[in-house]
Length: 390
Image (tube, rainbow, N blue to C red; front, side, top):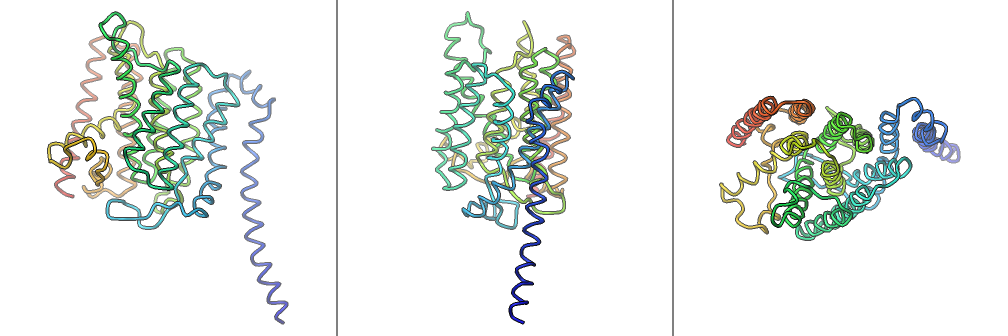
């Protein structure tokens, strides 16, 4: 009798395990098919490289996320709930490692590395490693910042440089050098700060990647368009595990993932040539695409200084609070899902403005920028109401 009971228990354990392995094994089919050289050749010949890259990166991220989630659970790398966070249960981190791996493998398999791409790849890898270490060991903020600076310097070493200041201006080289570092740090941290609600950082990464890809197509930058497709697919492959309306996220990006997405977006923006002989459009195109995270980091910074919450760089780096755009919208009474979707809609609207900039006259470009300013002003008003309500 006891022997039969033991057999039944064993069988009961084997069935879910076997079903789980079969289910996971089915996820291998698509990436394996896509990695076959004949399939890739067909995609190139059929002029379907953009969807091919997006689907490949998506399938790889979708495959890798359960693996890194299991590793995070085994290693105890969990994001514990507390008063400043919106989740209620301990949730595995390291999801960003899957996004990075999916993007990296897609790029390695499909691209010859340009000098600038090498710089962004090296810098992003530094940022990912530092972010994963922070997820595991909770590094001091100064060390995280140092890692981001190292990543930006690595990119600069390979020629990834903003050219905002005309080359014939005094000190142009050093000014562009400093602006490039500031750009990388700002975008990286802007995305990282928005990794506070399920799906928000990865979703904004996907939206920004999409619009970078579209504007790259408009400006005949096919290389950049395809790179953006890979990042878009990697972000989307992560979202089913993280953005689950009505249910808790199964895994978080962690600092490694959010900082990787932010750093990569910053690098793609610098690599792009968004307009010839029109510095206003060249500058405003990536700013509009990334307007929501850039606005949020600027709004929060000004608000914290005005209210006396921070008074130094160290205080800024150490400060944590529920004062970002998604927190403000939640304070207005929106659910987490509603807050995230509203932010997505705002970001998408501003991205559409960026698409229209390419062929716009100076008058039309000015109107688009004024429109964007009004949209962000509405957001600022809503955030101010949310601050009073919170």
